[in-house]
Length: 198
Image (cartoon, rainbow, N blue to C red; front, side, top):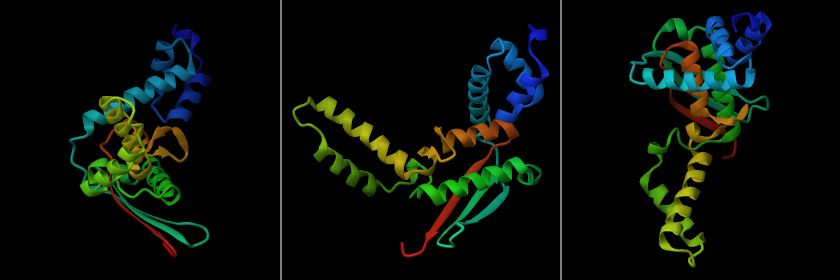
C-alpha cells in the first residue's frame, strides 16, 4: 500500500489541508489514496485535537484590524493562542484575517451562544412560538421551536455561522481545524464590528 501513494498526492493533500507530510501520507494510506476521504478524516482528527487542547492557557495572540475597501465597514478582532511563536506564523495570521473578513461580511451579533442575553433568546422563542403550527402535538411544536432557535443562533453567533470562505463548515469548525494544524489552543476572544450609519 505504501508504494501506491505518490509524492504528488501527499503534496496535494498537504496544500489542501495544511497537515504535516507524514500525517498526509498516513491518511492517504488509510483511505486507499482517496483524497476526499483523507481530507474528511484529517478534519475529524483536527477537531479531536482541538477538544484535547481546549483547556490550555491562551495568553498570547493578535489583535487583527480589517477595514473594507470602501472605508465604510471595519472590524477589530482579538484571537488568542498559547505562544508568541504561533502568533507570529502566517497560518495564525491568515486565520485572524479570515475571521475578521467573515465578521465584516456576515455581521454576527454575538461570539457564541452563551453570550446571547437570556431576554433576547426568550423574545426569539416567543416569536417562534407564534409561528408554529398549533394543530401539531405539543412535543412536535417544541421541537420545531428548538430547530428554528438553532437557526437563530446560526445567524447571530459567530462560532455557529457558516464560514464565509467555505460554507460547508462553521467558524467553530474552522477554528478547530486550525488548532489541529498549529498544535495549540486558539480562542476567538472578542470582536467589534463598525459600519457607517448603523
